[in-house]
Length: 184
Length: 93
Image (cartoon, rainbow over all chains, first blue to last red):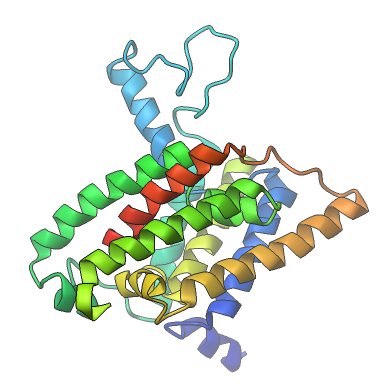
């Protein structure tokens, strides 16, 4: 029991162990809810739900669906299963940090980021903001993100997952090369 | 309602795994693209293999049917991935 407690309170696990946990969670999602894990879609559902409440005309399109139309929207707007899952992800991450007593509000404390990009928190926020837009836009086009497409698709042997992982690595490596230059 | 409770609990498991793998940190993601830290791939591929074994076994036993799979459209998946990678490498998200 003490060993189990020590395991749970460790700050980081072997990626293989954490990966097994995620694999089991992904399996349970299909078994219990006939759904796939994902994260990026939830942001789009929230955006669609808010948009439909504020500007129904603008948000009445094939992506978020048209009122009364028979065609299913590409992305269901509002509080969907994925949105609840995303909320759980936030709780789970917090719980993980609390379990190892590493929970802290951080604005820019990654040593490597500070060394390469700079110690100013505003840089982290500005790059984070625009980077997140790029991430979400890419996920929207591809049909999922690292979790919803690469992992969930990968476990079902969907070709899309592997195309996505390939694209993600090509541009990820190039971007890192440009950012790090000689320090790559 | 039950479905939402299931979603919340699965999310907690997902977030917990991400935190314990250290993937909530910028340098873990950035260093994957420099190949100095292979955490992202080890984590992803382990999850894929574990879930895959379970899914195909359960389908073989007739316990589950596969949910709607993410669509494959070569250009979209690839271009989406290319855009996604830029943001991921910049931010570490």
